Image (cartoon, rainbow, N blue to C red; front, side):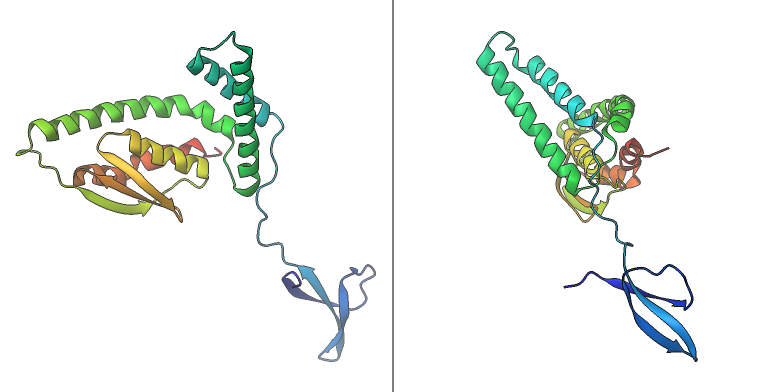
Length: 210
């Protein structure tokens, strides 16, 4: 099936004509050239991967693996760690070819401030859950499920947002699709705070190009 085209009409007499010229029509007695030009209004999937991102990702994953595993002197286990990190980098590259991702370096640079804010929110949520458990008559549990929009454009930031909700006690995100997220909360107040959008906006700011 031929690629979608748009028709552009130009007066005759133009010296350089594209190879895709299809014919000549008469428009009110004036000779008009008709062209078929591919429609490039739809952007192709993002395929450009900065060369430095993947090595940095691989090195970061391997250092993180070493810190978690604690195996520094066993060659076999270290080799398996390198293999697993390499596989993760390959899968990451394939994902970046298909889906638009924000610049990882931009997000990493802004992440510490967001994590500091998130830790404070987790502390507040812990206190709220303890309050629900110890004082159920005053602070009753009211399980709620709500679906609302995500402000982030990239899948990476949408994942950060969904995981941030799950890390916060009292709320769990269990579906992300069509730029919408579905969240279960043990009380309506937690859902109301999420719908106020502060966490949503802070995660979206991680990928902001400004």
